[in-house]
Length: 340
Image (cartoon, rainbow, N blue to C red):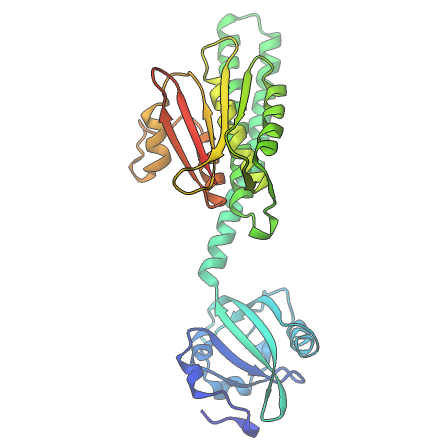
């Protein structure tokens, strides 16, 4: 691969799956590139040497050639730069790429080494998912709130029993939809939390804080805490969401006037990780719930689960690298086991 003025990449770079290009930080022109860059952009290296950044940047991209050149210059005087860019291939196709720039000297000449990765599939999938989250978080919740609010007015003003009954059902369903939207928000927060955001806390203290909040919401409930071992746990938001849903499920599905829930904190005998058992005396969790949770591919209209509380628990705990397990108590009751 010949190169102008002796600026040339080693031939071994052609075996890489990531695109590598050498840029002139002064004028923003490509000095040399490996074969992967040619595949990503659809131009030969010879063609790229004569093309400005603007010529292979998407017209609709909000960033200009000067922004790219600024990144090039700053990467020679500061730490490496990483950013996304929307390229226009030779055939007109628009793609998203992740670019990492770093300073490099070749043949005694200062250059910028660019690592280029085609992230189009990931980027578009991410933004479709982002739109999905937004619809659930905002649109669904707002519409459900309006429905519930209007139904409350009908309930307060109507004198017809059948109308009041129907309005009450609609209002309650609207509140359920709003609750689902909130649960989806909790799942989103859990799966997007980075490791740097995880904070280790004393497990019993973390559990006590959640229990205090739940007891304020459900003053008739009696929640006891037993510490078998002193343990530490990471992940404030995800852990809090999972434990809150586990406690609330045990309370709202109880048939007792004063629901009793036991929380046990200790070390897993198999893994040594923190193990938190939430025990109740409720009827067993229906098999449909487990089918929807663990075998979603087999879900049918008659087997769908009644809510998303179990999903929140599962996703939140798994986002922390943990597991969730469900057991039945003898003679009656359930145990939700959170391992993290």
